[in-house]
Structures are given as structure tokens and as C-alpha cells.
Length: 366
Image (cartoon, rainbow, N blue to C red):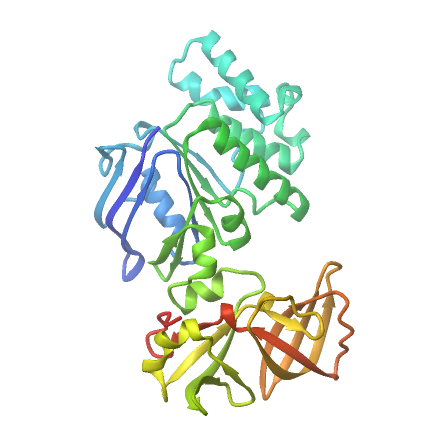
């Protein structure tokens, strides 16, 4: 078991900076997820740790050991790739045992480890099959099992679920979370899917354009995003953003979005008062927008008139795509709402959960 430390790590490919001054401490037994859009540097960060890419600057430690010049095979890590990378001519058993055979592990120990790992993953009955006889989910479990048998200090996962269908992805997500608890090993996981990150991680590192934007627990990233990018990336559907101005009227501090005005809660006034008269980006999540008369009790609601553009019935909720002025936004409303396209609708913003960002720096104000 081991911690992992990135210390001012950078990686350049010619003139392209893939990872820019990354510093992060991953605790022993933690499940850290790197998340961000394609090209943000998350996979490169993982490959630098694995030794598959050479550092341009900085240091990487596994435990207390500096591994900058250590060969990948000697770093005590195991990596699960997006492609399963199984040997097609070998059985499941031989695929899982192959790495141990290369290390001259005794035959009895290989057999014990393979069968133990197969039991953990529920693939004991598949050990004699070839990869072509397996489903996508089974192949993914074999790839994970091949990593488990090595008993590494750190597991690295590079978008391992992206080849699975939606239902199997949900199931495998839960299996990986249980596996992490059972093994008690450090997991570092890369994905572009923020739902995977939110459901599995003990902490999430959000990256964009090679830069670490914010690292924290899933709940804090959701409740208190540090900037506009994190706010828009974490949460599904994404947070709604409106260009607005902070104004004062009749002793009240208001967010003026042009086609609507909503009152700032007392607990947020102190933070927004210095921005009076300034332009900000006002943010509100779809789940904090409610259709009347189905507003939950105990929230500070601010009424907004809108026109329904499109509705999507999800069963337990309805996604309402609406327009206020010329600005479109999305609300997740009660399934009893009977709004139809083209109709006017009265919506209530839960101002207790409002967000505001500086328009120039994009840093969170509230």
C-alpha cells in the first residue's frame, strides 16, 4: 500500500503542454479520480505515474520513493486500460497468470493468486475460456483480475468502463467501489464521465487544458465549485449560467438577469455586496429549479416566468428546457408538472443554492 505524490509535474509534447505544474497528494488507500474533457491531461498524468511517459519537469513519488527514473515494471503499480489488452490465444487463467510467470513466481503461488482474484471478481467459471468467448463485462473483469493478482501498491485505471453498455457500466462501477473497499489499496482512476467520478471517488481532481482546476470530495465540488469550469462540469445536467448584474433596490440586493430579477439570500449578501453594480455570472442547478405548485417546503424561492421549449419525461422527473428572454436553461421538475412546449410556466429558483462567478476571472464569488 502506498501514497502517491505529484510534485510540480509538467509534460510537454513539442509546443503542446499536456500537463502544467500538477501538484497533488494522493493518500494511502484513497480512491482518487482524475476527471475532465478529452485532451485535458488526465490520461497523460496517469501515464507519467505508470512510467509510460517521461517527465518534462517535476517529481513523482510512490510512498517515499522517487520514481522519476524507475522502469514501469519496477514501480509496483498495475494498470487497467480502456482496451482490455487480453492475449487472444491464451485462456483467462493464463492471461491472469502471465505477469506472475514473467516474474518467476512459484507455480503454486500463481495458482493461489489467480483463483483468489477470480473468486473476488466472480469469474471462477471462466478460467478455461478464451477472450473471444467472453462478453465485454467479463473481459473487463479479467483485465482487472490480471492487475489484482500482482498485489500492487497502486492500481491505475484508464477509462476502463467506456467500452461497456450503460447498464453494465453502472453495475461495474459498483463492483469497482466494492473492490476498492475489499482490497484496501490506492486507486487512481481516469474518466471523462463525471457520474463515474461522483459515484466512486473519495476525492476528485478536475482538470482542464493541462491544469488542475480543483481537487476535493464529490459533495464539496458539487456544492462549492471553485470556478465556472468546475461548476459546469460537475453535475448532470450541467449548471445553468446567466449573465447578470448585482443591483440594489428598495433595500434588497438582487441578481438582475435582464428578463428576471431574483433576491439574494441574507446569508449571501455579505459576499455579493462588494460586487454591487458589477456584472457576474449567475448559476443555478437544474435540480434547484422547481415548477409551481410543486415547490418543496423550506427553501427560499424566487419566481421566474419562462416559456417551455421542450420537455423530456424521465419517469421520476421531467426535464424542462425553457426560455427566459433569449436565454435557454434547463429545469428538473416534479413529474406531476403538466407543462407543454410553447406554454408559459412559472418556475421557482431555490436561491439558497445559488452560485455567482466573476465574469472576468471566472472564480466563484458565491
